[in-house]
Length: 346
Image 1 (spheres, helix red, strand yellow):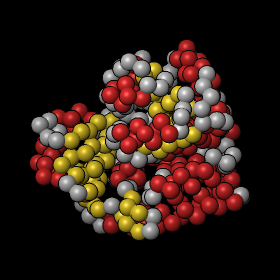
Image 2 (tube, helix red, strand yellow; image 1 turned 45 degrees about the vertical axis):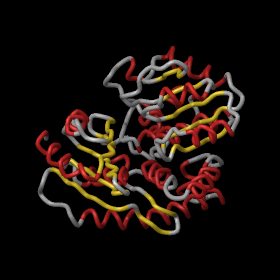
Image 3 (cartoon, one colour; image 1 turned 30 degrees about the horizontal axis):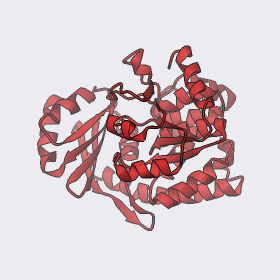
Image 4 (cartoon, one colour; image 1 turned 180 degrees about the vertical axis):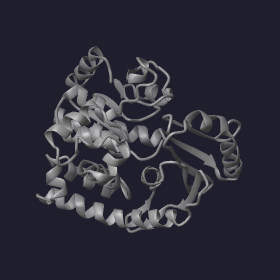
């Protein structure tokens, strides 16, 4: 967690703006971070970062909102050139390694105070505003963490998260708040217009019961879309499990799932659920797109971040993340070599 002084400073940044733009990562931790700040501020706009391309088109889109401050939430790296071109006060709230300190970007990252502290962004945002505990718990559990915030939530909402649950995977896949996290993850898939429509409904929802029990029209719309995307996800998961062997390293390659929702990527969701089901394995889930392999890596016990970085030396692409949960983009032509090198390092 951030020191108390930094949380106060972050809250001041939030309080001292009128039309903030919240740019957040395309997962439950990022979405929950946005929801926590947006519901507190009751002003501004949200924008999901669906790609890592900070080009002129993205810059124009950002400026079209005419924000007086920008918050980057759960975004691992924000390019210095983009901040220089932005010329708008910018705040970066994140928990990943890799972002250099750059002029014009105020940084709030627990790693600056303890390199091993990777408290997820939704927990940092809750520590700042101290509202909507259920949203913070959903984002935290979805990011494979249990902490003082989820402990507090389990006391207030025991039916949604039992205090007996001590494992993040069990919290994600065997609790009701984990189900909420799954809903939030999957409604971020598909066409941008459909994602934005789902988020518009989501910001009006005020409790986890409202979502899961579909108590309002907004909740019904969110769950309708979740159920639709979840069917596609379950098909890919079932296909992946057909290839499970006794090998410690499991590599599964698939193409983006296409239907009327557009092309969807499930690499993160697949790697998390397969890790829960097969905790002794090291997993590489790769989505083939054009000449690239977009990968999600997971491990239950083996540190993989340094191994990923070592295996990628000399190759085109990039990779990084946490000790046991990483992402990478590797050229298709290099993928077989990368797998061989990574296997040697295990």
